[in-house]
Image (cartoon, rainbow, N blue to C red):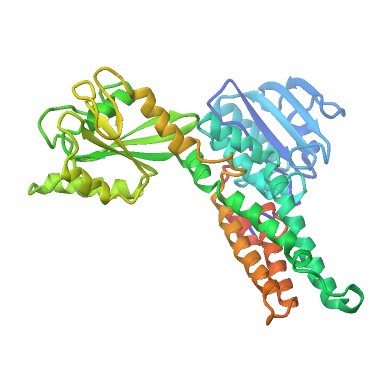
Length: 436
């Protein structure tokens, strides 16, 4: 793959965003990193992990630190040079590195070398990308856990159980006379436990997706149900136009809020009714599209007007998870659903708590935020289930289960990188930016 080409060469890149700070750091990594650094920063000595200060060959001044092989991020001899952060200072520093024997690093090449040198596994490499891209505290917390190797720890019992089952199958096949007949619990017990662990892992997928990409909460209901007023109340701003004339909202209006570290896409929609107005009907079609995509639909009705037959028909058409909210509760009491007043604020805290229960408090913290990991685990589950069916069948030889068990173990290796094919590595590291 392209990322491995030139692996023995010395590379250099700025690992901080140039022009966005007072200081920029250029990393030089590879077999000739020290000699390149000494041409650029002739003031450095022999000691590693020691910050030397002086004037660079470019005329700028700053710090340079050397890291010995095995003691750096990449696992290679590395120099990190800190100079002033202006684009011209960074450009001159990089040109000096290139003239001294380094070449420009490719996107993700530092992290790729760390992976290839055994400094990190593949999931940890993806955790670095997730850490860089995090936009909320909860995303950062999850990304840090992934980067610190939590996923490998989570997968260890599954891998051990699959290996144990494979060893048992192979031993009972090759040494049946010596071992004797095994009970079903001996043959399948570890595999059943592995499947339980896999299902527990996959059960976190929805929450992982919400933490990573946000959750979609749609406000739906008939015209004049108070959707726009409630959007404004939740956002604490006059984002949507509020008017007593039915049908004011003719398109979806989307805004962002954050709840316990999860980005929430809050969408106000056109009122649901049969309309002869082509523009309004187009907005209603978009409402139904948003409803189909929603993680949670808040179906609003006017408590002052009461629940109507049209409300029953609309709710009956909702396939998504939904909750009923009685708006304008300052004008009327009783009825179904959670009472809320956008005017007085009564019930807003309860509504936020309802959203939290539906969106945020939906399971244990996921071990990963990466969609690829969940896709692989679904394949592992299918292979493990096939193996279990084979071992429980009286007509299929047990040794056929060994084939699917080996496939399941290889699949798990795609997560940690032990058996990830080159195209998977290429796809993952191509998503990194230069300098990472």
